[in-house]
Image (tube, rainbow, N blue to C red):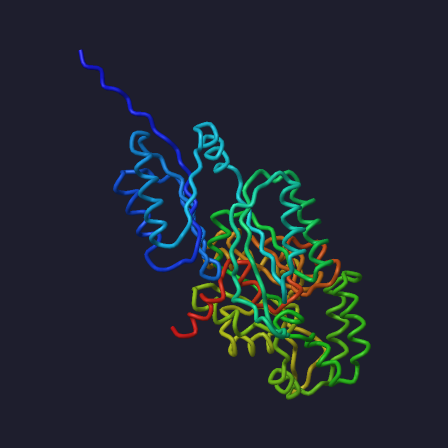
Length: 414
């Protein structure tokens, strides 16, 4: 009776490094194919034309020696270095088990990034018993000399493991962000994070760098009084609806023509045009949900291509503001309701939505959305929201979604 001898296998981790050039990966993988090796894992990175390639293979132990010899010869010919490390089956089993653990995405963003920021974030990850399994740059390379006042620097860190205390992690990131003048976002890497479809924005002090009601008040000669009420409302000190009624009443008698002049001279927030171009090109639906006024929301809709506008309607009689409004007030509760309604209309899961705002009346909307971002927000709002963006313009949300600069640039030519 013939007994067929079972061949043993080896697990080998192959690390290749050196100057990158076309054909390196192809040449080395062709050798693996010749020996019928099974690839269990593979990863490659190129940093300033410097190659780092890792391949974990399973191969027949009878041919492993010849395989490694051929790889060494080919690596020498290509001018790269190759290193082999044996992997035992128990270690491989632990690695497979880790793949079932949660995956998180940390986005680190600012005008510039320092080694201290990366070190502090990495330490916070390690203290949670988690492991970084990938880092990639989302922004273009920074200039060596001089600093662009509107420059951006962003890296995305992929982390795997069971997060012991998400609240503690976010609080630590907020502390690091404040100390280092950066923004740090922590998101669980779920299917919904990779398929956002609806983005809703506050208008005043978010899409535009002013509160329109303050601009109207200046024209009506009641600027200081209205601004005091506005600031108190944004800090959450008084009810938004009550503050809204009081402020609108002070506008009584203002000429309607003033609104057009203000609209045409609105100070647009940095990054709005770039952000909207990218969102529209990639099929996102966008909405303005504002406690401000429809006149100005519709102006922005026409200018930038927003899909929806919901705001407050001022009553106008004989070309003059009456000091009253029409319909229900769009307050914080109403913004959250409108977000849910638009998600239903667009047939997207609420977890696929993004909300962006700066004031206390935006908190219900930020809490309802799958991704809520406090933008250059008041301290109370920033401390309450899960994510915040305070160092650059509104196009920073593109990095939270996962866009890379070269992808955004490529869209301009479409």
